[in-house]
Length: 270
Image: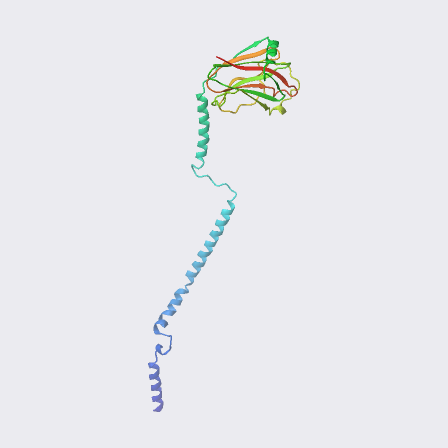
């Protein structure tokens, strides 16, 4: 009988126990925590997260390699890009063409020759700056601006012993000075010329040594020809086509050995 009573008392004490008898532990925590732990340790989500991270790292590495490989490669020009520069270039060419179109055609010059070679030389020896030496390989250019008081430019010249190249160009640029000036330039074509001795050449031979004119405002009045100025006086005139500057070229660029003594005068006429 005593044993039954002890057992009954023990069962009564056990049934009276609850989770609240243990500090920090509740029935709610015991019910939910196992489920939370299962949700946080979902293996499928962990695997997907790892796989996504790996793909992101791989894409990032490929992007870096692609950018490094394109550092030296020229970038493709987007449609329309660079068209402005091409349009500017085309506009400049068109502007130059329009400027040339506005220039009236030049009339040919009037030229003549005279046998009074000695008389001209004797007269010019007494005038200042009328007798000059055009050295071998050089081109002497006389700049003659137009003036309101005249209507044409005139010239006469002769040489001692040998011929010389002569040509005329007209610069349509606005006149900034009324002074006649002389410029000496060296030819860049001396190495291409193999002529050691100068033989008599007819008036129809154009000199290869004359420099090409690149000024867009420059018009040709008379191309550079070798003139027999040692045989007869070479003279001529040209009516002003408008405001500008004449360029009279005495060309000795074809000569490798001989300097030329030049007698010349340039003057205006009404």
